[in-house]
Amino acid sequence: MSRAKLCARCRRVVPAGKRCQCTERVRKAKIDATRPNAGERGYAADWRAVRRQYLDAHPMCSHPDCQAVATEVDHIQSIADRPDLRLRWSNLRGFCKRHHSQRTARDQSFMSAEARARTWPADLRPSAIPLTIVCGAPGSGKSYWVRQQAGSEDVVIDLDEIKARLAGTRIYSAPAATTGPALEERNTILRSLATSDAPRAWFIVSAPEPAEQQWWRRQLGGTVHVMDADEETCIARINADHRRIGHRERMVERCREWFRRARGESRAFEPPRPTAPPLPTKLLPELGISDVDKPFFG
Image 1 (spheres, helix red, strand yellow):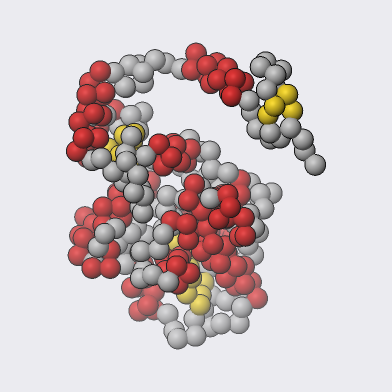
Image 2 (tube, helix red, strand yellow):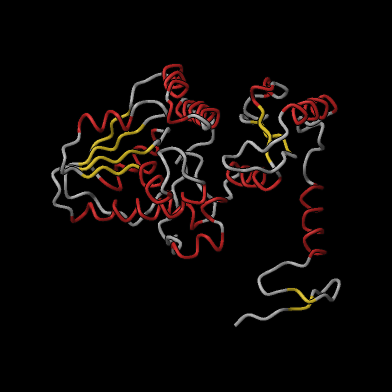
């Protein structure tokens, strides 16, 4: 069993697996010394003024189901990608410190190996039955299209439906903490396709980038069908859908991000390493992984 240790700098007792606060301060100072200053990174006086004004107008965290006060302002499209949108309110959103840190970690590829393994499981085998992988943005009509195509005995795998069933809520209203367990159940069903005797299977997944779409096809076989609804149509459908009341702003944001990624304007898809094992479901609530590490597209 691992034991506590003494910090070599301050001689404090440090729990096993943890860094002492003084060591962490030194580490961060070294990183900061190599970074451009705030003004060079786009956070000069004009940004600070806009930030204050935005937080005054949007005092609450924009993360779904979070009731905390917003203390940070996040750029939806990064300054590096779109410097022209640096001060545009339409490109901003407020977060509490916790959810801003989570967003930053995801954007900078800090998603844990376990989270990647749940989102893109590398242990799948090709489906034994005909499979269609249906990709598209929120509001593109993926679920409706599948309902029109699928037979009564077909297997339909829809993460939104799984989340709603596990949470006991209507669709699109499941809390964020449901995402981890829902991904585990989804992956169990995907693995079962290798031995299924159902007539056909339909897998609904957002997968905005062609690289991700082809990754799923290599893992599972079958064919990929990408919904052809354009961005304006998807947003109009989201705003007209009564089931999305209370979630429209979040889903419109996800829709816009889907199209940015589909156009190649955002960071490219990065599949997990095949050695990363899925995290046991029983550990999810304890570690908060489903909230911290859940993918931007569920």
